[in-house]
Image 1: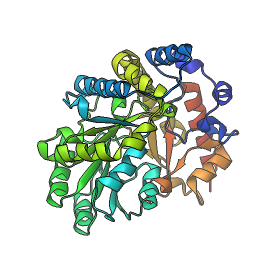
Image 2: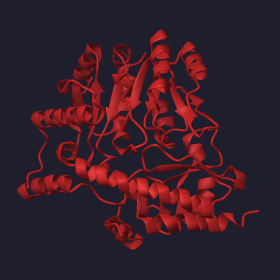
Image 3: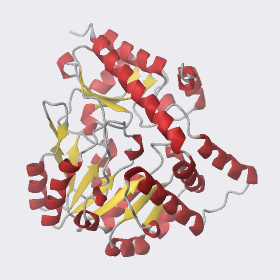
Image 4: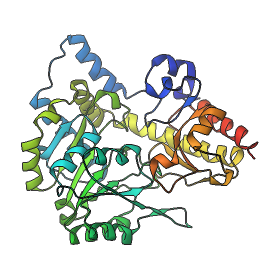
Length: 387
């Protein structure tokens, strides 16, 4: 048995955190964080700082080192050479989206969301006075998701200014291939648009897929892209509050230097130290963890086949998120609420990921195998009796 599988629900609930305490009578699977801790190198870096008893503000030099560590990681993992001097630190990837909307797009221009996508993307742009244009991904008979290029082109033609590109995708787990991304470059450039590339899940790609950073596709892509990433998903440290923006043109870097003082100031000190330790010294741990997640994905395949025979499930290329099509069960009302109340499984209702996804359900399989088994078994038991 893998050591991760020794962790039980009682221990997770006792440890605290929103995922396991928001719904104390349910299995928490609605937040994208893992139940297996973090890399020893990260823990050691945090302990070393705690032992000093000094908790002042993070230094400019430490933020710069975080940039260099990310640059080393991007080159090592994806062969993408970026200027470490043009990487900014800030507390959240969502903070990066806020800055991009406010300072790197045409005032008042709409934001394009290929859906299904991450839930906060539907509210954050509106909070900044922007209209949202949903352009659903197209499910293919081959079991893949494709962009609606005509829909994206039409949205830019109508005046949209920013494409939110989440790759690897949340919630589908799709890793978009180079040939899927290249048409976007032409569409965006033709309309003078921008791309905000959310690549936070890129460390969690399974062996069968290859992640290509969007800004690495060409000089044109680099010119119109702002890339956001973080060690928070791969190394399971979201609460430490450190994300990074990668700038690949002069004008954007100049804007960042002008507007970043206060957002960057709120970056977590422990998050910066943890990020450096993760990228530089946590690679072996990450490799082993991705292997564990891949095994969980294989287990989930079998569990869905056995307990949810009417569900449709496209196996993800990356992440630890599974996107289940439960429409054939005709669950009444809100799918997420119904499963929480009847199965004791607190997942994510599909409509929170896009208006066209009623009857879909997102779960998180970065959890011990006994818990994952119980989760799907619970769902299967109540859905088998639905009328």
